[in-house]
Every structure is written in structure tokens, then in C-alpha cells.
Length: 435
Image (tube, one colour):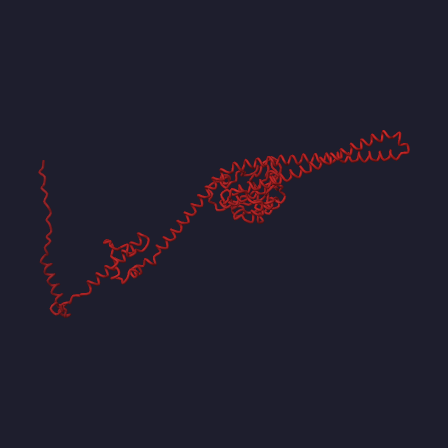
């Protein structure tokens, strides 16, 4: 093998100045001295400077002031409010109040110079505290509302049972009234026939008594007098029966009226869910007397729900006996309409309706109904023709006096109408495949 060549280290350059560098430095120093001599600024001729006896204490005072201002700002930023003298008293980590007063004249002057009194931190904290109080108040209100809802939920089954009992009693009274009215007509017919029979008998008796040969007709006269007495007795009996049935009829009608008012008060009591409703039913003055009155009152107080002109026309024609239930449903609809108009529901109307207390929400009607009876499902809203579909079923049983409907138009903002819910028809069931 060939011998490996031994590597040699490269020579290090010397850090010592070269002769030429030393020569250049010498000439530069001499030129500098010559220039100073020409300017009469040589060290020999310059006077010795006197020391500044005030600079050091002033510098220390300025530094101490800066540290105090820094401390005030830092305390305010961390605590959210400016410090008080007692906060720093006897705390070696913070400037002492005596030193602050010595540097600034007073504690308030130090706070004023720091700028923390004009800071927005205190204002922001006040706003935060106010917002927190508002949230706490709102939370308390929601908690109370929740308790009322729970109480109403517990009370609702009993109210529904009472309503069913009262409805059954009213239906029975209604049936009894119709029976009495039918019996009254029958008795009136019998009375008229008995009165005609009695009049005929009286005429025949008078004729026989006036005849010349009264003796041979005496038996027939006595017979006719007996029939006449029986006819008069029958008329009296029928009169008494009619009077009794009239009394029962008036009593049943008062019962129906009282039961209707009671049902209306129960409807109004049910409307208190989620509101400040007491356990006592609403006063009679608070219960609408007709469906039209219920619609007018709801329209006057609704904040979000809108009403088409046809809603009032159909309400005026409705014989529904529970206008309080209509008012309750319209107030619940107003709450639902507010959520829908705001656009923050997050769920469908059919899902949100039960949350507002509406249990009989229907999403629409059949395509056949909307095609066959198209005009019935059209209303005019602010000059626009709108189609009805979603509706609420009210009441139970059969007939316009016991059941009612509230038909709606739901606008999403794309049909020329602003986003919201409009009541189109209130009252009678519109025609469909079930009617």
C-alpha cells in the first residue's frame, strides 16, 4: 500500500497588526491631534466639567413616579378597579401611600395622572355586572315560568276531565231541550185539538138545551156534558204539562248557558299556561261572548300574528260555543308566530306548536280538497292572493257549535308577503273529503 500523505494544518493568520497598519494608525492619530489643535479643542485647554448634583435625585424621583403609575395601572387591570391607599398599606411589594403622596402630592393626584379614572374598564365592568344581573333576573323568570308550566301540566288533566264532564252535561241538557221542544209541539197540537173538541161539545150542548123537546134529549145532553168536562180536564192537563215543560225548558237553557260560561272560563284558565295565570278561572268579563269578539281581541293585542279580512267575516258567522278556546289558541299562535318570524326556531312548526300549547296542529289539507274547493282556501292578504293550508282543530263532537277551525297562511318571505303567519279563516270547517 502506498503511504498516506500526512495532512498539514493550515497556518493561522496572525491577529497582530502589520507594520503598514501600525504606520497608518500613527498617521491618523497625528492628523486628529493636528485638527484638534487647529480648533483649539485640545484636552489641555478644555475646562474640567462640574458634576450635576440634581440629576441623580430627579432621575430617581422620575423612576419612582413611573413605578407608582405602573403599579396603579397594573392593579386596575388585574382587579378591575383603581387601588385604594389601604390596599397598599403595609405591603412591601407595593409603593406605600406616604411615598405616593410625597411624589404626587396626594393619592387622588396619582390616580388622575395615571389615567385609570378615565379608563373604560370600570364602564365595561359595570356593563358586565348589569348584564349579569339581567341574566340572573331572566333565569329567575324562566325558572318561575317553568314551575308554572309544570303546575299547569299537572292541572291540565283535571281541567280536561272537568271540561269533558261539563260538555257531557251540556250535551245532555241540549238533547233534553230538543226533546222538550218536540214534546211541547206535540202537547200544543193535542191542546189545540182538545180545545176544538171542547168548543164543539159546548156548541152541541147549547144546541140541545135550546131545543123545544129537551126531555127526550136529556140523556144525550148529560153524555155531552160528561165529554165536555173530560175535554176541559184534558185541556187543563195539557196546559199544566206545557207549563211544566216550559219551566224545565227554561231551566235547561239556563243550565246550558251556565255550562257554556263555565267551559269558557276553563278555556280561559287554560290560556294562562306560561303566563301569570291564577288557579281561579277568569272572570266572566274576560271571556269573549262570541268568536268574532275573540278574534277582535286577539287582533288588538297580537304582536306578531296577522289577520286577513276574511278571518273576521268567518268569525262573525261562526256559532262555535267556546269563544274562549278560540282566544286562547290565537294567543298561543301569536307566540308561535313571533318565533317563526324571527327565524330562530331550529325545528318545524309542527314540532314547535306543542311547545306553545297547541296540541291540534295540522300541517295542511289534502291536494284533492285544495283542488276541488280551491276558492274556499284562498284569502287576500295586503292585496296578495294567498293559499290556506295549516290549521288548528278546536273542540270535539259534531256540528259548527261544537267544533271549529283556525286556517292559516304561512309565508316564508318568498311569495310577496313578509315572513310570518296570517290567520285566514276562523270558525266553520272548510269543505274537504271528510265533510
